[in-house]
Image 1 (cartoon, helix red, strand yellow):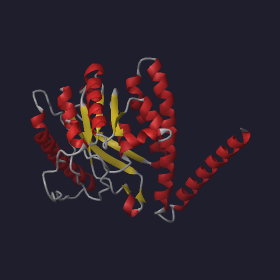
Image 2 (cartoon, rainbow, N blue to C red):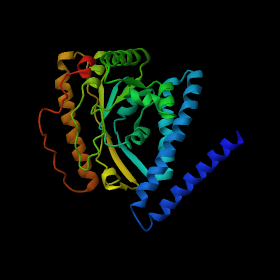
Image 3 (spheres, rainbow, N blue to C red):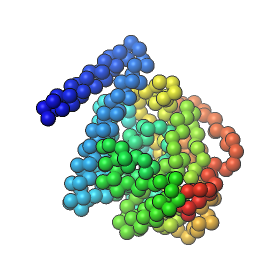
Image 4 (cartoon, rainbow, N blue to C red):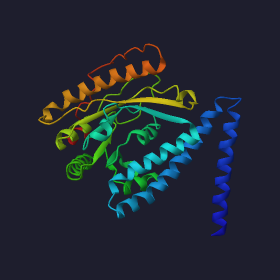
Length: 303
């Protein structure tokens, strides 16, 4: 046991020393900052996920399990600010984040740094959705399982349908919000753009009869751009848009709702990015289609 503890302590010390080395090196070689912040981010994620496991168990015992992800997200917010210098600023003058419940919150998905974005905006009593494969990850998967994450197996139509039905039941029964990324995956884009939207979040909102609250984050390739080995400190702006009511809508309205919401979010994203950069930003050209993933395979079964 003492031998194992020794190697754990040695490994932790070596990891810390390596991270500090790259931070020091970044004073002369800016690209070293990319490695330093990447190393810091990984250890922050593991530490906060471990904290989240304990917090989830404790909050369940005292009947506040619905706040497990909020508490863990806030912890990640502060440790990442201290170790990487990355922050998000929220524009929400009408306090939609705290006044709209239950709701389906949606946002654009740029990189893994969006986990930190959740640390700033995630309201109390909110659960995220995630692909089922994350459930098997050490630390992060344990936390997500204990804290009420809605796991979706996109390769399994029955599982996808069941996950959405279960999420709708939780929303209506517990007044629990759900946060989703309708793009389904990260864009890693250098300029503001949105991938085609999947319709699951919109089906869910209509099924539960709750509003959709779009949250738009400006393009932040100036802070994190993996292809360019760029990871800098900085403040990233985000904006909470007016809730979109879904009461009275039917399944037949989902495609129009998805398309109109995506167009609204894209316009706001371009505007927010232009404001942050202090210069005009062109609207991206839609290559084909209307930006909505057509129903096929597992996606078709979500409805």
